[in-house]
Image 1: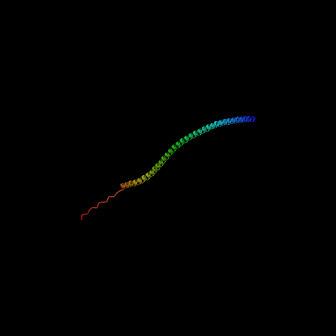
Image 2: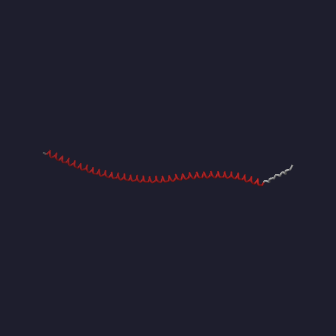
Image 3: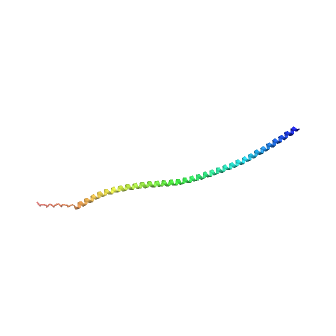
Length: 136
């Protein structure tokens, strides 16, 4: 009978050891789960921070794009105005040249006519003598 008692004691010790080991494993699992949950929370917080930063960056980029578009449209309008002003200036310059040429041409002709009139008016004209008709 002795052998049975020893065996039972051995079995009890082994069972007790297994239970302790199971408890240790369970504790480790709980600690691991808690640690894992904490890591997940940290990761989630980091991801949320990163997402917020990305949203802020996107908003800043959108605002900058809006400003760039406004400046670009203003620049386009200014270029159009400059082009129109340059065309206007060229047309006025051409008109002024043509005007000077036309005025010079007109004055030359007019002066010539006036000088002719003056010369004609101051010219001494000889009158023809009337022929006396002889009665035959």
